[in-house]
Amino acid sequence: MSVLNFSVENRIAWIVMSRPEKRNALSVELIEGMTEAFLLANAREDVRVIVLKSSDKPFCAGADLQYLTQLRNNSLEENEVDSQRLRRMFDAMYHSPKLVITQVEGPALAGGCGLATLSDLCFATPEASFGYTEVKIGFIPALVMVYLAEKIGGGAMRDLLLTGRILDATEAKEMGLVQRIVNSEDIDEAVGAVARGCAEGTSGAAVSTVKEMLREIPSMQRDQALDYAARMNAHARATPDCIKGIDAFLNKQKLTW
Image (tube, rainbow, N blue to C red; front, side):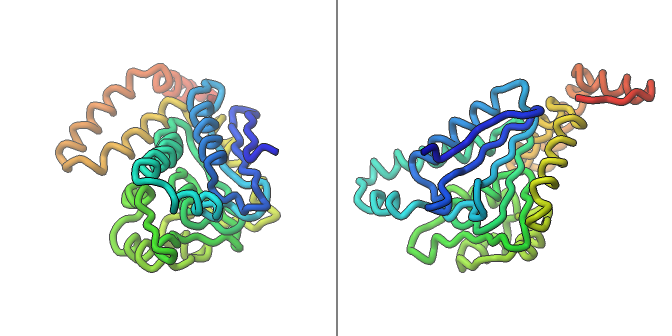
């Protein structure tokens, strides 16, 4: 049975984790499947939005127990190879030029919380929970720490990573890990509506450029960042999408991307 389902409809790519009996715990098969799915969606011109969700309520419970058992017996070199495998999955998501939405309806823990963190928008039900629980088993959230520092950073990040405590959806939203809380019976429609709206109502080229800038600016000094922003601003004005958008605005025409 496949651990992952991939489909594209109306310019939305749906990546659906399907290991409900294991709470979508991250196995080698699931990690490699998600990497392949994101790379495929990233490369497809007919995809504007990517939605990552689960086929059942648990979103992702972190690493698979069998997978963890194997890791304890690996050599250092084997564990480094495996860490790079996980990094490739996270990077395929992080560097996606598309708008990435996660739909979380249950626990998103450890690496599962990392997946929610890496999305551009996280929709959660009131029953969802989030946590970087690695320190509770003597492990560390090493890779996700790099991405999380860009999203929230500071004392909030230290709180999450050092205590391993689990947050409900409300506190996760207050911290910036979640952008929308939607009742369970409404979340499919809410995610679908936003995905469709963005697929039709936003420029794919503009979204890709904004995401690139959001990745680059945090590592720059202020003046360097402003010089970079000015260059990107000037470049954007000459793009076909910008010209099309301005023409439609001036002519009072409805624009569908």
